[in-house]
Structures are given as structure tokens and as C-alpha cells.
Length: 420
Length: 164
Ligand code: SF4
Image (tube, rainbow over all chains, first blue to last red; front, side, top):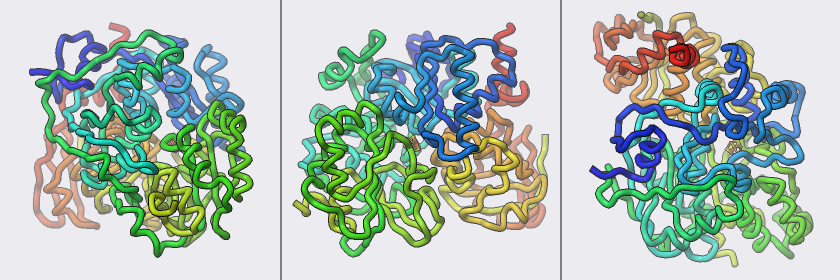
């Protein structure tokens, strides 16, 4: 029987001709990743076991993005643990204040992850890199520590769900709307333990930023990973960027899928996930009665250049609604600099927004935009769980950058296709 | 290996932000973190929980972040086992890796109520409800997980393999 794209990558990294769903394998890792929260725990585990070197200094990544620039003394201590470790063990891909960005925006941008890779990261949104045609999945800190030590780990080969994309998105509808819609259809455990394999003629018209956003939220449907085929868009993105040669894997025509879901991109309207689960999706136009206190545009889901461009196009020459605190966070230093160069940051400030250095910040309720009791935020992040951005009685509405920017302007949840 | 204790019951989709809110993760000290376990949905939990107690929940327990702090704080609070209809996959991995026993058993998760006294036999997967005089059969751990557990966690099992 044929294999899915995910299964092919896993088989190759396990040194096997073929694998099937449910099989337990030991696979070689191309990259291992951690951040200031999970990396600090992994460092403790690694040291406690007395390992004296990592398996490959160029394949271990530490990105200090969650609580940096350090928000308090405890966060500083935790980051220091990672900083000391990186220095002592000669970690080449160590990214700290000044050259860091949010990990899942940074690794593709720097060409560290490439097509055909097998990657684990001690962060659930490691599944983002499936956009590049890689297998990548989130694990815990002990997994990370073990991966850093030996360069391989165990996996259970996942069964698959095929997501067949047709047509082309309308203006102001984006990858975020696609993934929110899909999660609304299958639920937050709809793809539990499985891979989400995106296919179909609709793929061609999706930009790399759209694909990265879609794969980023595969975990929000419980999936082990999300993955896109490698096409011209992928090759164009990797060319001149990828630090290693890449390998293109394609699904066999007779690969097995447990389920096929078809999405007509041309019929899709902007989606918003109401609190407190990403599956609680509604068309954005149903939000007209919902006034908001804050808007966040950023995160590993939507802090990329296209997201900034959308926000700029909607907010330039305008002013955000009175009482709506609008926080814009470009995801990496390169994106931040490009926004400066193009004059977008000035436009944001003129529109009454604040702009932050790259950081996860409010996405996980760390700092830089914490909500009080009863406050509502439209956010381009990926989770609207209870208490995620602050008080347990605050509310997060997940949306695309277009919807978030349009909502910042009106002061309530707004469909960006109706607003202009 | 066995567990016995009183049950704290929770609904479907208990996420890692509820188990241990990210706002506290500027430390990785399990004891400090354990004081906030479950506080966003059950402020009483850390006051009520006794060593050996068992957590029971619905579908997709532990969804959300990859933070290993989640199973770690549950374990640090003294919980001896978590029984759920299903677990989110990273939580499942993490629980095994740090040595928190977990069992998937929809029948048990449905029937067991808050406050019931329950015991679990990990070798056979048998769950006994002493309050209701019922028992439920969960699947025992697959062999590779048993190997990790018998080695005392993932790191130890890797060290053993490396020596061979
Ligand atoms: S931006 Fe949010 S979801 Fe992404 S890595 Fe940071 S905390 Fe996690």
C-alpha cells in the first residue's frame, strides 16, 4: 500500500522502505528546537543525565522568544540557563535579543528548516514547518533533551486526513480563515494523533505565509503535524535561503486517508473563533454586536510580512477606534526592519497603534498586553483558552490580520470584506 | 504498580493553559508551579487534593501547549494517575516521559463521578470503582512504553540504549 507524504518522510528518516499508520519507529532528526520556557527545562534534564555534548551543534536550536526581552527576574534567570548552556555547548543556532524572533517565524526565514526534514521542537506549534514540505511536530522538554543528546527519537506513524483545497481565496480572506474554518469543521480533537495533508489545485494560489499560518494551527485540531506538497512556491521560498540541500517527497497515489475534507477557498468568508476554544468558529460578520478593548496582531501564526502588509493596508491613514488598544508585533527582526524600511511602522503609530520588538508577549499571557476581567481582545494568535491572555474572565476572539485590523478601526468584530 | 485514591473530575478539552497557566512559567520549579495547578477552572483543587488522588476527564485532556510543566505539576500535586476518554498527543508523550501514569478509558471516564474512590492496576489496565462497585477495562501500556517506564523514564532508557 502507498504512503502519505508524512509517512514517506518518516520512513526515510527511520531507514525503512515503508512504514504504515500505527507503527512505532525510531527516526533520525534534522533539527531539534526549544525556547526560553521549554529549553530551560530541557537543559536541566540534559545536565541531570550528565551528557557532555549535543549530537550536532548545527542542529540544535534555542530561541529565547516567550519572555524576552526578559520581563522579570524569574524570566531572566530562566533565559540565563539557556544562554549559559548555548555558550558552553557551542550551540550554533542560538537566538537571543537583537537577533531573535518568534521561533516558528524565525527557523523557516533563516533557512534552518527545509523540505523533507524531520524536526522536533519543544513547542506545540513546531508543526508550522509542514508548510515547507517537512515533517515537524511538537514534543516535550524531556523529548527535546533526549533529541539534543542523541539526534533521534521515537514516533508512532500517524494515520492521515486529506484536506482537499479548491479555488482561490478572495481578497482579505487568508490562510488564517482556512485553518479556523477547518478546525470549526472537525473540532479541536478532530485530527488527534493524525497528520493533516493539504492537497488539491487550491494549494498553488496559497502564499508561503498562508501555508505557514495554516500548518501552525494544525495542533489546534489535535494533529501531530500538518503538511503541504512542495511546489514552485516552496522552491522559490527555499532558493537562496535553505542552508542545506532539500529533498522533495510526494504522497503515493494510493496512499490511505481516513477521511477527506474539501474546502472551496473561493467561497470562504472571514472566520472568527469565539472564546474559549479554536473550534468555536463563526463568520466574522456575526460579530457586529461585540465591542472590543484590545487588538493584537502578531505571533507565530500571523506576525509575518504579509500579515503586516494587510494590517498596514487597512490602517494606513486611519485611526483605530477610541478605547481599542492595538498592539502590533512583527515576528522577527528581519520583518521588523522591513516594516521600518517600508514606512509601515510610522503608519501604525499614526493610526494609534503601539509596535513592539519581536516577542510572544501577550499571546501566552506573558506580558505586553494582558487583559483585565471582562475585557475582550481580537487577536491573530492561535489559542483562545480560558485565561490565555490574562484574567480568567477575559475573552479572546481569534481572527486573521485583516479582520483584526478592521476590528481595531471600528471597535467591534468586523468582517474585513465588508469594511472597505 | 497500582494507584488508589479519590477522584477529581473534569470535562472535555482541559487544556494546558488551565492545568498550568503560561503566565506562571517564568519559573520551572515544580513546587512553585504546583500551587497554581488547575486554578483557572477549579480554585479549590490545590486545597483539596491529597496524595494518591486520581484525576478523571473527558476527551482531549491536555490539549494546547507542549509544556511538560503540565503533567509535572499534576504529578507534583500528588495525583497518582489520570484517566481520560482521550489525551492530546504531546501531553500523552510528556506524561510517559516524566513518569505520570495515564490511561485512556472512555467507559471509566463516563461512569466515574467526582469524589468516587477508585483504584487502578497498571499492569492489567483494570480500573475499580469502590464507591459504585464497578470496574472498567483500559488498555495496558504498549510494550515500548512499558520499556520507557521500566527504565525510569525516557532519558534513562536512552542512556541504556546508548551503552548497548
Ligand atoms: S507566539 Fe504564541 S503560540 Fe507562538 S510560540 Fe509564542 S507563545 Fe507559542
